[in-house]
Amino acid sequence: QTIKDTYESRTYRPIFVQIEAHHPYNLLLFREAIKAGLSYGETVFGAYPAPAVWLREVPLLANLPTRPGQISLSEPYGWTANSQLTGDVPYIYFVGVRETLKQWLFDKLPDSNQSGLLRDGLPEYLAQQATRQRYGVSYLITQIARTTTAYRMGEQQATRPEPAMLHTNEPYICRDRAALMLACIGQVWGDTNLIHCIGQFYRQATRPTKHAVTATDFARYLSQSLPDTLHYLADYLHQRQQFSFAIGSTGRLPDSFVVGIDAEKWLNTGIGPQTPPVLIANGFGTYNEQGGTHRRLRLADYVPIVLLDANGAVCYQTRVLLGAGQQTIRLPLIPQAVEVQLDPLGCWPETNRFDNRKRFDNPKRLPPATTEPTL
View 1 (cartoon, rainbow, N blue to C red):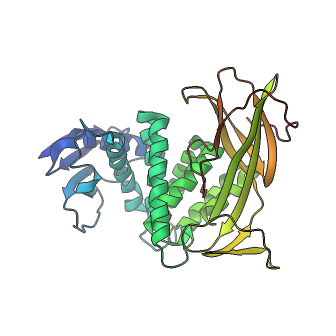
View 2: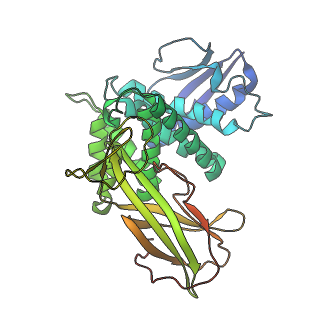
View 3: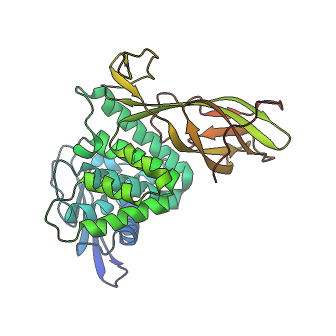
């Protein structure tokens, strides 16, 4: 079946939309997603670079090149799902938005070995934010968990050391890990600031230049745009950093909650999933363990933290500046809060997420807080 529609751009230029499918269950949902992607893309990047959007369903093993204005999606991307029965409607919508956003980057940025983050990572992150506007934070948590799983699978199947994110087209790195790292940056700096930065970079990158625009150029532009206190966030894109967060003792004081946190950060250059390094120095500041070499990094990173009520809803959120080792922070005494959670979206690359959320103990006195939350 084929459906046709027209999207009126912000410059009052009609953009023709056509969708062809052998399994027509979700034609209307894809049409809605494409028009949402056009609207969101115009907000971030500017005018749509083609006169039309043509989306078609192709067989699973078909290898058809993407062309300006043309999107080919194989069967597993939602064509055969019954949207009346499946709970994955947000994912189908997300795929339609993501593939539409790719059109801006495909048409204007070069296809080189250093542009995978631009063509795959940026639209993955932006599509998550666009879909969040429609389906809320609960969707975003689900999608980030899906992205984390995809990255871990690629990591486990790797047969060589993981290349740098800025210099590879491996999907599990330049798409999945990149989207996770951009989500981390957005949580700390603010998603609005990061999205504005991406749009400004795109406008500059699409001007006539003498050299090809690469992911390294984006990382440099991001670094220049970040405030001085958050300059370290640019390292998330070119270093393979791992973290370990753990919430220890918790308690209620007469005027506040007190939370103990143990945190570490290290650089991992090995193959496959890694665990925190054993504290055995080899004389050069590194630690040897199965699967690769680790190097401890100075931890002075902001991480979001939230208080949750009995229904799991957020009743207070802020960010805290974590240092290496154990520390104690103080949070406002919110009457309905019963739990505390660090990294509520699950973006930071950790080996264990089961100790990032904890219920408050019975009222008791703990050591005075050493770190105040930063609003």
